[in-house]
Length: 393
Ligand SMILES: *[C@@H]1O[C@H](CO)[C@@H](O)[C@H](O)[C@H]1NC(C)=O
Ligand SMILES: *[C@@H]1O[C@H](CO)[C@@H](O)[C@H](O)[C@H]1NC(C)=O
Ligand SMILES: *[C@@H]1O[C@H](CO)[C@@H](O)[C@H](O)[C@H]1NC(C)=O
Ligand SMILES: *[C@@H]1O[C@H](CO)[C@@H](O)[C@H](O)[C@H]1NC(C)=O
Ligand SMILES: *[C@@H]1O[C@H](CO)[C@@H](O)[C@H](O)[C@H]1NC(C)=O
Image: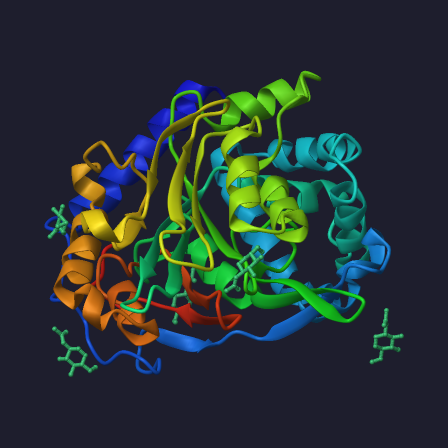
C-alpha cells in the first residue's frame, strides 16, 4: 500500500461522494434545539468511572466488559474495509503480527492499558493498537470556546469521525461513524474517589479528544491535515525514532497532570508531536481561551480570546485560522455566522448547542456533541445523527 495509492483512493472517494452533494446543505442557524430532541439526537451518553488508582491493566476492565460487543463490531468493519482495500486479508495479518510489538514501545501506562483492553474484550492486541492509532489520523471536527457576558467560558465541540471510511451509497452513511456512536462514553477519571478530570471518550481508545478539569481548564482536539502529517511521524516511530509524543497520550496526560490553564497551554504548545493538530483550550476566567495550531515541533500563530478586541469566541474546524477553509468543506463560515448572529449577550449552554446543531457544522460524520462549563464543572454529551439531506462531512 503506497502513499500514492492511498491518495488516489481518498481522492476518488471524495469525488464520488461530493458529486452527489453539491451544493452543500447549509441551513439557517438553528434555535430551540436544547434540550436535545428529534432526529438529530440519538441518545444521552452513559457515564463510567475509571479509577486511576488501579493498575493500568485493570482500569478499563468494567467499561470494556460492557462495550465488548460494540468494539468487536467496530473492529470487524475496519477489517472489512482493510480487506476491500488490500484483498486477501494480508493487511490484518500484518496488523495482528506486527502491531502487538508496537504496544511495548508505547509509553507507560498506555501500553499496559491497551493490554488490559485486549484481555477484557478478547480483541487481539494488534487490533486494539490499530484502533488507537486510527484517531491520530481520521478525526475532523468543530470546536468552539466562547465567553458569556459574565466572563464565564463555555466550550463545545462536535466530533466528526470516519471520513473516507466506507461510504454506504444506499444508506448514505459512513460505516465507521455508525459503529462509533455506540462506543461514545463519558468517563469520570478518579483518584482517591475524587474526580481528576471528565471526558467524552471512545471505549477502547485510551487517548483523549475531549475533556475538562473542573474549575481549571477544558480541552478539545481537532485534526490538522498536513503533508508532513501523521503518517510520517508514525513511520518514524516504527523506525525507532521516538522523541515525539502521540497526540492522544499528550492530551490525556495534560488532563491528568496539568493544574492550570497556563500550565496546560505551555505543555500543549511546546511538546514535540508525531502529527500536526489543533488544540482548543479554555480556562476558568475571562480571556482564557486559545487555539494552539501545532506543527510537529512548532506552535504556529497562537490565537487568544480578547473581548476588548471583539474576539469573544474562537471557532476551529480543520483549517488554519489564517487561511481559507477548503471550499468543499467550509464549516467555519456557517459556524461563525451563527455565533455572530447569536451575539455575546445571548451566548449560553443552549445557544452553543444550537450552533453545533446547524448543518453543515452538524453533518453525517458527527458522532457526538459535548458541552463543557469549567466554572461549575459540568460536562454533557449527546450522540448525534444527521438524517438526509445532510452534508457527508
Ligand atoms: C442500511 O440500513 C438498513 C436499515 O436501517 C440496515 O438494515 C442495514 O444494515 C444498513 N446497511 C449497512 C451496510 O449499514
Ligand atoms: C473509594 O470508595 C470505596 C467505596 O465507595 C471504598 O471502598 C474505597 O476504599 C475508596 N477508595 C479510596 C482511595 O478512598
Ligand atoms: C482557576 O484555576 C486556577 C488554577 O487551577 C486556580 O488557582 C483558581 O482558583 C481557579 N479560579 C476559579 C475561579 O476557579
Ligand atoms: C463574524 O464576526 C467576526 C468579527 O466581527 C468577523 O471577523 C467575521 O467575518 C464574521 N463572520 C461571519 C461568517 O459572519
Ligand atoms: C436571545 O435569547 C432569548 C432567550 O433565549 C431569545 O428570546 C432571543 O430571541 C435571543 N436573541 C437573539 C438575538 O438571538
